Each structure stands twice: as structure tokens, then as C-alpha cells.
Amino acid sequence: MKTILVTGGAGFIGTHLCEFLLNEGNRVICMDNLYSGSFSNIEYLLSHPDFRFIKHDITEPYDIEVDEIYNLACPASPPFYQQDPVKTFTTSVIGTYNMLKLAKRYRAVLLLTSTSEVYGDPLMHPQKELYWGNVNPVGIRSCYDEGKRGAECLCMDYHRQYGVNVKIIRIFNTYGPYMREDDGRVISNFILQALRGEDITIYGDGSQTRSFQYIDDLISAMTGVMKLTDFTGPVNIGNPVEFTIKELAEIIIRITNSKSKLIYQPLPGDDPKKRKPDISLIMEKLPEWYPSTCLEKGLKKTIEYFSSKKTKLETEILQF
Ligand code: NAD
Ligand code: UDP
Image (cartoon, rainbow, N blue to C red; front, side):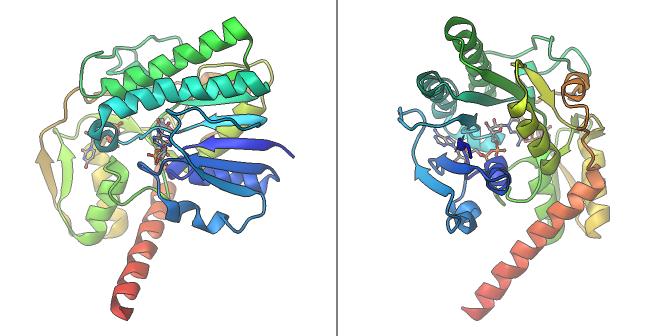
């Protein structure tokens, strides 16, 4: 039985990961300051004898003996990470530094959840791991992009200088249940707008592209990477099927049978124009893995989640 620390464990990805690791028979410690995560996400895990929640901010050191660390702590949605950019940057860099010190002390393996944002507004398409990126170092997204680049740098230096076993994964746009309703990322925004019959807010002209990965595919790949020996990465994890944002809006309107209309709002600064992962490296390392959930199937599961949350809330209000 391994003892596994999941920082950011009460967030969207963290909740799924904690559940997966518990089901595998591990002892799981979820550490989170609840900045963008929710206690309600992990409440159902509290009765599990091998689950523990620690409310802690990873920019402060913490001493605990563990075998593995999944370092997820960091807000991931642009509105959340831009709300307190200094905190975002220090969480990525100082938080990762604190976790690397822990990994070194207890010879634990540390997996960093880096991001496709390290490629910035990419000039190489699709993006391969060898591409160094096109990042604005002083823009409104740089607290996140440069924070993650700094975290990758620290991981590699701890690996080369102290022999710490690190793994770096670069996650491309991932979605699914347990996203916050006010998260602000495109899939949760569009689904909620469609379900409520509100206007769908397209930023820019909607011609920018993203490639969307369903959460289950990410969890199987990231836990697979943790199990690999002699592999550091960085490695892309994502679904390579690319959609324009306008296409995404139209698909969501169709599946939800919504009467919502598209409206166009200004494009935020430094918004990447194109994004699509080259996944040949992860497929070579994990030959069994493939992002098997297509967008339509993943969207249906996510829509079901948000619809049932809405129904639950309405019932509670009626009972009140
Ligand atoms: P999220 O915002 O739902 O989860 C992040 C969690 O980290 C939250 O629970 C938050 O409260 C916690 N946190 C933030 N700052 C903290 C701090 N200083 N100390 C302790 N906890 C802190 O986001 P997510 O989508 O679940 O992303 C998880 C990780 O995956 C992040 O590191 C993110 O950069 C990375 N990632 C996600 C995506 C994606 O599409 N979801 C893409 C690329 C990378
Ligand atoms: N976006 C949009 N409407 C929204 C939210 C986002 O058009 O309500 C766009 C956003 O400008 C970006 C894309 O959708 O081009 C993906 O945005 P998200 O915040 O989900 O992720 P990221 O930009 O970090 O890839």
C-alpha cells in the first residue's frame, strides 16, 4: 500500500485522481487550500478509512512522509489564475519547490501537472514536447504560463542536481464532472449557458481552436506515467481532435437541444489561436492508452453532471 499526496486534490482533476487512487488500494492524502477547489467535491471521500484531507497552502512548507506526490495545486482557469496572479506564480514555483524538498527528503516520486500553456501561442502545430514555445513573459497569462515553466525548470534541476525522481506531464484542455459552475473555462460556461437558455459567450470570432480531453482519459494516462520507471518527460497528455470554439458552441447547443443564441465578446489578451497536442510520445510510453472518449460522449456525461446538480439545487430550494 502506497501513501500518496495529492496537492490540489479538492479541485476538478484532483477529485477524480483521489477517487481513482483510493480505488487502487492506496492511502491518499489530499492537500488543498480550497482557493479554486471545493470541499463538497471530496466530502464523499471523507468516510473512506484511507483518505485524509489536510487544508494547507503549498506555498508554505509541510512535512509528511509519502511515497508519491501528484503536484496539482494551482488554479487552472484563466479567470481564477488571473484573479491573484502573484499567488498563482508563487503557488507554481514556491509550492513546487516545497513539494520537491519533500520528495528529496523521503525519496518520493513527484509528478508535476504542467500544461499546454507552456507552448504559449504556439508557432508549431500540432505541439510536440521538443517545441520551446511562444510565451509572452509579461502578459496577463504569464503568471500561469511562466509559473508552470518555472516549475518544470525546478523539477528538472532537482532531478539533475539531486537525483529526485520527477515526472512532468503537460495537460491539454481537459473537462468533465466536478468542474465548478463558476469555473469560467469554455466547456462549463457553454454547458451552463445552454442549460439555462442564456446567450453563449464566444470570445473573439470563435475561430480559435482547442482539443478537448475527457477527464477519464487523463486520469488513466497520468497514473500510467507515474508507474513508468526511468521516464521523466515532459510528455503531452491530451486528445488530438481539434475544434474551433464556434463548433464547440454549436455541438453543445445541439446536444442540449437549447434555444441559446451565440453572442460575441472581446477576445482576452494573449489567447492562443490554435492548440492540438502531438501525442506520439505518450502513446509510445503507454501503448495501451488512447484518448478513447470522443467529444460528444464526454460532453453528454458532463451535461448529465451539471443537469443533475441543477435539479438537486432546485429541489433543495423548493424544500426550503
Ligand atoms: P482546479 O482549479 O479545479 O484545481 C486546482 C486545485 O488546487 C484547487 O482545488 C485549488 O484550491 C488548489 N490550490 C490552488 N492553489 C493552491 C495552493 N497554494 N495550495 C494548495 N492548494 C491550492 O484546476 P484543475 O483543472 O483541477 O487543474 C489541476 C492541475 O492541472 C493544475 O495544476 C493545472 O495547472 C493543471 N492543468 C489542468 C488543465 C485542465 O484542462 N483542467 C490543463 C492543463 C494543466
Ligand atoms: N472562451 C469563450 N467563451 C467562454 C470561455 C472561453 O469563447 O465563455 C474561449 C477562450 O477565449 C479560449 C477558449 O475558449 O479561446 C478556451 O478557453 P478556456 O478558458 O477554457 O481555456 P484556455 O484558454 O486556457 O485554453
